[in-house]
Length: 328
Image 1 (cartoon, rainbow, N blue to C red):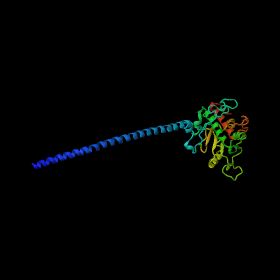
Image 2 (image 1 turned 30 degrees about the vertical axis):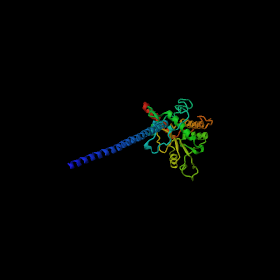
Image 3 (image 1 turned 45 degrees about the horizontal axis):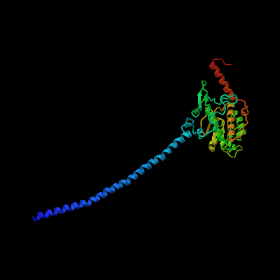
Image 4 (image 1 turned 180 degrees about the horizontal axis):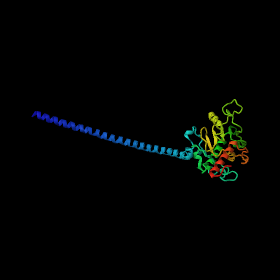
């Protein structure tokens, strides 16, 4: 009996202890629950703050992306003319992009198309050759039935404006104009007189831009070329010395060592006279000077070279054979 009473007492003592432990643990559990709730409440503002900061970052980044897209549209990066006139096969590509240079009255032509005195079509500035390169293809408007290529006049006009703006940024004494073509010698002489630039009207001597020991040595900062095929030596020396080169190019030209291209007929005397007249007149306009030269003053009086006469005779005979007429 005594043992049973002792066991009952031990059981009662154990139950009392467990109840006391429960009572003691309950406040701790409540405290822990309260601390968890407090931690949640403390973390909630942090999460809200992080969400707000992410939204703010997105809002801050969005205008940057928009500005990049707007800058691409403004700079005219996605345009056919800037992508196409450069050929990987030709070596050096033109480094001056005409589309990134603003010009005065870019929408209006410098002269009327069919003006009797200064028209682009009147003087055949738009007429190219039968042979064409991939480099010049973007400037070609169409090919006539006789296989002659025709330039797009609006691109000729814009390139003349850009070339004039580029030349006007240099001191005239630092601009050298070269032409080994007979029809180009007189126009560059009148161009030099009108603008103050330096012109080589005689044969271009090898070493003029690279050899300081010769009499004709010159150190220009810009070179203007009449025909890349005839003025190849000047282009090579300009490339060696790092002088930028602007060239009037026919349909048979490649862009190697050229920095800026003016498409147009560089064989005809009237065409060359009009191109140089317009460049000189536009330079005077940019600088705010009076321009009094006339088109007739730029036209060369040189006689056609023998090879041109022979070529014209061959073309005449070929045309007669196609028409079925007998030879004379």
